[in-house]
Length: 148
Image 1 (cartoon, rainbow, N blue to C red):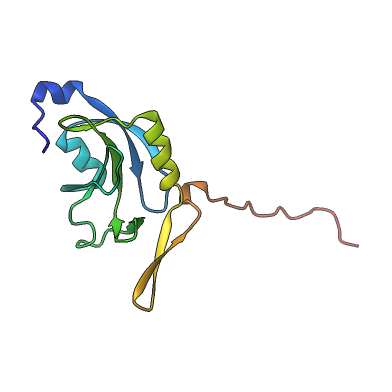
Image 2 (image 1 turned 90 degrees about the vertical axis):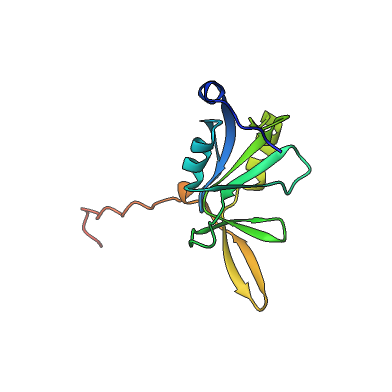
């Protein structure tokens, strides 16, 4: 599977990843490629899943649903990821940076945050506007001119 990264490699290696938070637009970030950095982003123990043919991994909180993290995005038609997750590339032996093409592909794939509703025996994902894009209306200023 993946080899352990030595301490000197940990300090040197950083990787460009896509971070996907609940109710927000995905964002690119450069993080250290060590276990501690991955755990900090997802908020606990990590689990990696490989649902796509592309050389990418979804790194998420291992117990996200069990501890009640907010549901984030659907993972194809068979699962929902809870909490913040990372999309990273796969190197020959460990996680790696996303290529620009894969970064754009998965940024588009996860662009719309989702909320989830139970409809009968199915759970349905409904796209919503990202919280980071929400428009906050300014209160109207009261006119100083008399009304006619």
